[in-house]
Each structure stands twice: as structure tokens, then as C-alpha cells.
Image (cartoon, rainbow, N blue to C red; front, side):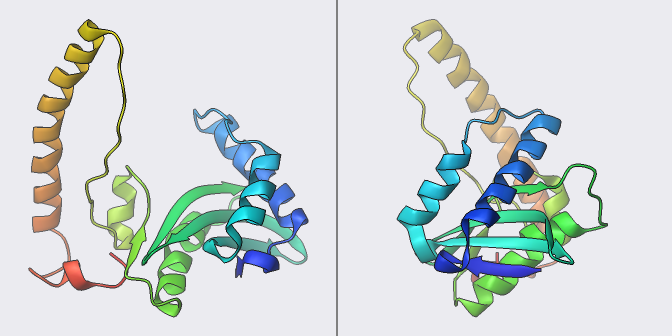
Length: 180
């Protein structure tokens, strides 16, 4: 495992990461909306705000996890691996454990591992609310979505409370933990 930032990330890393990204989108119900050029341009514009975690076997890259650094937070965003690659727990090492170590080394307050994923709880991440903003032109569709979101929000809050109440952290501790 290696963590690379800014100028340490070469074009060949991004070319490999794009293949990993496509493997994920092609096999995990996704849509490959990002292009290979996107990763190269993002890296040139964001510099040291980009953290790429890579896994190597010998001299060959086999997997990677893209993280972005903003303010006091490390944002984990994309993961991918070489087709037909399987190493037990590699996903968790690249996406979660390496992110936690990087956040500690960089003195960041928070690791934001992305929306969804009950599998993250056993890795030390309790759920936090995430938000998005959408503009809907059709009033009927807008009302239907608002109605659904009202009901869903109540359920999500309840489930989050139950998960926090049964989580490993004592009251008041998890709010100040550097990686939660």
C-alpha cells in the first residue's frame, strides 16, 4: 500500500486508476460518467489536495482509492481494482484504514467515507447525515418526492439513532474522535 499526493501521482497512476474505476462502474451497477482526462485534469488543478491510495503487487498496480482533502476533512470518493483481482479486505484497507492513517498524519479532524454502506460500521464509521440539493421543474413530481423524503427522513433519523446508540463509542467521545 502507498499513499500518494500531488506531484507523486504520475500519469500512469491515473491511467491505471481509470481502469479500476471502469471495472467498478461496469460491474457494480454504475455509470462511468468520469473520463480518463477528468482524473488527469483534476490532479493538475487540485495538486496536494488529492490523495491516491494505491495497492501494488510487485511492480503492478492492482487497486486504488481516491480521496480529496478539503479544510479539515479527508473525503473518500472512489475505489476500484483490476478485473479478476481479489484480496481479502483490500477494499477496506485502501478505502478506510489508509484514510484514517492519512487523516491522523495530516492532522485532519474528519474522514468522510461517503454516503451509504452499513459495512462501514464494522470498520469504525458510524453514520452521519449527508445532504444534496436538487431543483425539480415538474410540480407534481416535486410534491411526490417531497412527500417521500419527509417520510424517509424520519426513518433515516431513527435508524441512525439506533446505530449510534448501539455503536462502540461512549456518549460524547465520537464527536471528538479525529477519524469519525
